[in-house]
Length: 132
Image (cartoon, rainbow, N blue to C red; front, side, top):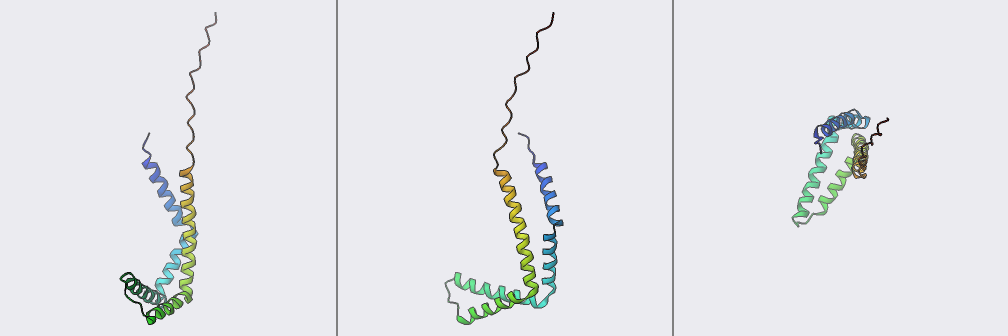
């Protein structure tokens, strides 16, 4: 069996380049840049992530989470969810994730297909008897 690593890597490179040019990836990159440039959005996300991390850490350690912490997390969640820049990013992220899921499913299905049966070796054609 020949090692077709170079062929596989070449196809992976081509796939990566095609994904980079895909409109869903372009929209995701643009939405990400808009979130990074939107100071209220980044501050809201940072505050939400810090609060969620604190609560998660307490829960894992078996420590009580007080009502004010839960209310604050919910308030921060609502702030994040209401931000139009973040909503646009989440839509672009979901669209790109769908593309990646479909691509992975396609690859998996191609790998799961039964291998083509090799054609049985044919017996060499018998030479015709010489004509006299």
